[in-house]
Amino acid sequence: MIHSTADVSSINIGENTDIWQYAVVLQGAVIGHHCNINCHTFIENKVSIGNYVTIKSGVFLWDGITLEDEVFIGPNVT
Image (cartoon, rainbow, N blue to C red; front, side, top):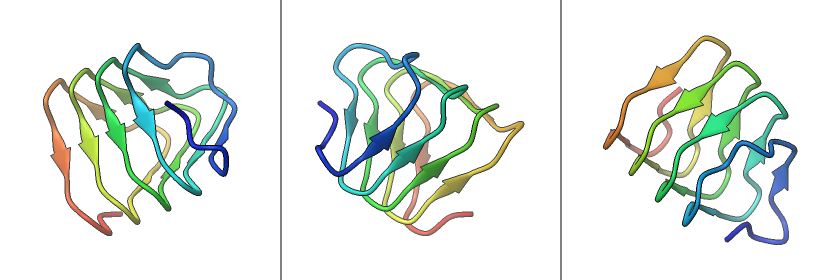
């Protein structure tokens, strides 16, 4: 599910991943399956996110970041 207010340019998003309000996902980002991307997040082009990852509100992930499977990123981590 991608919320109608999210700005998602990437087509590399796994099944059963939720992306909530006002999230921005740039074209080159890769997101695994069963992830939960909360509102007010930013994911840059060269970011790779594994499966079963939760990213809480206010998180910014910059180029070069790789998150393995089953990672939890708490609110407002930059």
